[in-house]
Length: 258
Image (tube, rainbow, N blue to C red; front, side, top):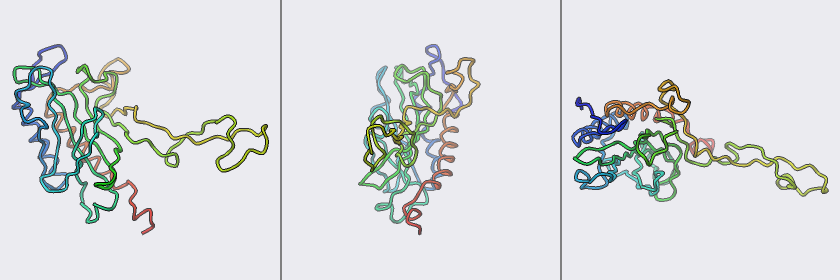
């Protein structure tokens, strides 16, 4: 991966097939070191190397063991993703809610066997296999020069997926004419009580790559994608950080006071 990508268009980096393959091998090796089991990153389309200009090639990480859980509609574009167990794997993972993690990346063919990286992301899930798997957050790096991506968001960034429940995080709003929950209004002149309404943070992008990349307010948060080595480093360290934070999530046995 020592060969640098060349520029075919202003601010648009393209990578040869060999470098895309090498990136996925390096990523899998780094992920294995942190997950403590064997993984691979494989293409969703077997003929991706022959794609014509403009076609998307999608890649997903999967465990080479038997613990992969397919989660449909896992990504913003509606594509699915494999959810991998977060170590240490629990013996009751089929019945007890726990954290899971997935990886996916997309490359756009630029013709002549070269590809542009569109986005790469880790996705954290919480749930029980075969029952319910909720998306909690994503750590993603999107190429703002790719037309389909929002070019104002910080890159890379943390992105919250799940709508937070009222008891977890809420804001007081005034519901005119509404009595407090569970109570009937004494008379029409009684002042309306604040009603706790849930907040949805799924549209927020929380920058994680610094704020000195430009003089512009939006672009200052956008770290350019320069090479695949930097992407592997980001993915590896982000996974390490995610795994170190996941133990703080609530567990059913803790909630039960065990």
